Every structure is written in C-alpha cells, then in structure tokens.
Length: 455
Ligand code: NAD
Image 1: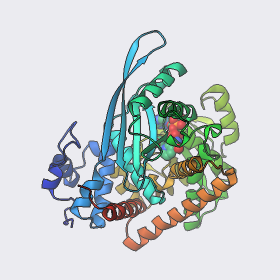
Image 2: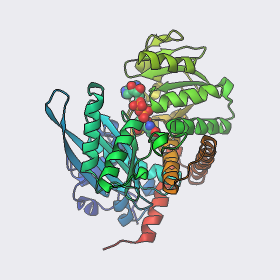
Image 3: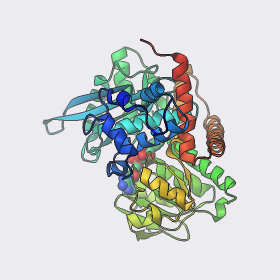
Image 4: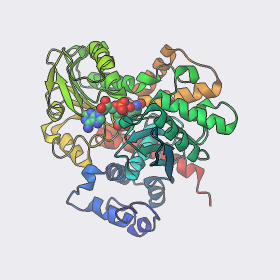
C-alpha cells in the first residue's frame, strides 16, 4: 500500500533500470516531485507532467507499490535510426521512436508524429496518455506512441514516403493488429498511414489493413475518422455547457491550432451555433468579436496554405489570443502552452484540451484556484482513438458502417465517458483531471491484477 508521501518506496523505484536515464535516476525524479519548489522540467517536459499526474491519482487510489511501478513506466521503448536517400542523392539518418506503455487491456494504440523537437520523453508521455485515454473511454486498447525527429515541412513527398516505409520496416515485428496499431498525429496523415499499411502488408505477404487506423476510407479507413477528434471535443463541450447551464448561441470560443483537431473542432462548434471569435497559430492569430466564419476560413486556408490574411478577421498576437476573454478555450496545437507564465491570465470559463498535454502541472493548480472547468485531454480528445477503435473493428470484420452509425456510437461513448469522469470527480472530491486519471488507472490496475504477473 502506498504511504502518505505521494510516492511508492524509493528503493523500489531506484531499482527501475532505464527510466530517466537521459538526465537523472528515477529516484531523483521522484524526489523532485515531492520537493516543494517546482522545477523547470515540470513546465517543459511532458513526461514529468504525466508522471506527476499519475503519482497524484495513484496516491489517491491507494494503489499498491507493485502495480504503481508497473503502470508508471512504459513496458517497451524502441529506438531506430533510419537511413533515407534524399532527393539530391545524399543519405540522411533519422532517429525514430516507438514506445509501448501498456498492453494490459489490448494492443498498443497511438499516433506517430513527425517534428524536429520529438524526444523520447515526449513519446513516453504520449504513450502513457494513450493508455489512460483508452481506459477513460473504456475501449480494449493499451497505450503506445511513435515519432521521428525530422522537419517534415522541408521534405518532399518522396523523402517522407521512404522515411515512413523504412521506419515501418524497422518496427515490423513490434506492430500489428494484435500488437500495436499506429495512427496519425502531428504532421502525419492518411497518406502516411497508407504507406505504413502497404509496407506492413508487403512484409506479411497479404493485405492487412487493421495494422493502422486513420487510413483513407477506400483502404479500410473509417468514415468519420478525420473529424472524430474535433467531433468528440464538440460533444464534451456541449456536455460541459449543459452542466454549467450555458447555451451555444451565447458561448464564445477561441481555438489554438488550425490543423486536424483545431479546424474540425472550430467547424463543428461553429455549425452548432457557437461563436468562434479567435484562432491561434504558431506564427500569429485571427480575432473577430462578431465571430469568424469557419467554412470561409477553411476554404481560405485550403487555397493559401495559411490562415493569415483572411479578410473575415483581424490579425492578432499568438500569445495574446490564448488569454483573451472567451467562454471556451480549446488549445489544439501542442504541449505545454498553458504554463505558470500565462495560466493566471486566462479568461475562459471552460478549458477543453484538444491537444495532448497542453497544460502544465503548475498551471493546473492556478486553473483550479480560478475555478475554470477543465475537460482534460485524456477525455476531451479521445474521440479520435474511439473512432480508430471503430476502424480497427470494421477492418477486422470486413464490414463498414455508415458515417451516421460511426458518429452515433462516438457520441454515446463520449457522453458516457464525460459523465463517468464528472461522477468520479464528485464522488472523490477531486478535479476533473485527477478524476479522469483515477478512473483510467483504476481500470488498468484492475486488469493488470486480474491477469497476474507472468514470471
Ligand atoms: P496538426 O499537425 O494537424 O495540427 C497542428 C496545428 O497546430 C498546425 O496548424 C500547427 O501549425 C499548429 N501549431 C503547432 N505548434 C503551435 C503553437 N506553438 N502555437 C499555435 N499553433 C501551433 O496536428 P493535430 O493532429 O491537429 O494534433 C494537434 C494536437 O492534438 C496534438 O497535441 C496531438 O497529439 C493531439 N491529438 C490529435 C489527434 C488526432 O486525431 N489528430 C487525436 C488526439 C490528440
């Protein structure tokens, strides 16, 4: 049984072979979490943020020491170095990761991201979040995540294809419909999934479309998958409004990130009558107090490749937009954008986390003091993985649902999960984030105990 110090026994954690090996021993990491002064790492390192939330929820659940150790660390971490012939004939070598945090409840599940700042700690955190996310929405997957350190914006389609196929080949024995099922994430898309599916199928000697989700529909993708994360966000936002006695027509929204998650969230909320007044991007923002026509903005971006210069809004500052007055703020870009530097300035009533890990643990406390209703990432953006689950089910059945069927099933799961988290929060007297972690950890711990330890 865990003691009252928020940590399992240090001796046991110190025995962990690899975690934190890049910068510190696990024991030092645990000491940090209990130290009164908050460190920079807790604001900048997503793994630290994930671990701090896990520790708090595990402590409140009185999780026993052994299960605590099993669930705190990823089960498997794979690093690959991928040689790729570039268009100019040079050979470049890229570093890629795949981390499988847990397969207790089913195959690993989680996206693959391409970005220059991908790190092993980031992928670890994202893999762990996938475990908790799949458990919050109660689908039979564990958690995994992958990434390649690269600058996709400077690479040609041919270079991206060769890199993706070589990465897939390097992971061939670790992925598969019953093992670990990748999906798109930042800077990867349906085409990336098609390349992975084709490479895996070539190695296996037959077409196996259930190896990835987020594929094009004609290759076994699910209808509704592209919009699913944004749709899930719009559904839980509706639920939060009901809970707080608010109505869409009088609700203003600001969205950070106008990629897959951000643009679909904005569009679906706008369709439901919400007033989307601000859109933030990494290089600037748009603001219009009367509302931005999201259909027109999508058309503009499709033509120009940017949101900047859109005639239906004024240019705004990318940092100011996050702290501008609105009812619902949706960070849907990347991690650690709500920190000790700006959390106190937030002027929203609801924070609906579209991105994974947009809020640091330090900021969490500030938001709680301000009374902001937080819909945590592992609940808010779970619509994507839920529809990925539907895709995997359809691929394995070889029978495909209509978009309405997909959307109805998604709606039911998102509403049930929102209510589960809310009830858990009331029953245990904790905030929504801690409630979501407790619910998820409880489910994964139960399965892990039931399966027992194979030795
Ligand atoms: P994306 O690449 O399609 O879009 C990201 C957008 O955010 C881009 O427009 C980019 O320019 C912008 N952006 C990047 N850094 C920014 C910054 N610092 N400030 C403002 N804007 C910035 O990626 P996506 O698939 O929409 O994913 C966004 C987030 O949602 C990630 O955290 C991802 O892990 C998470 N997520 C995605 C899915 C999914 O189904 N795609 C599901 C769950 C969670």
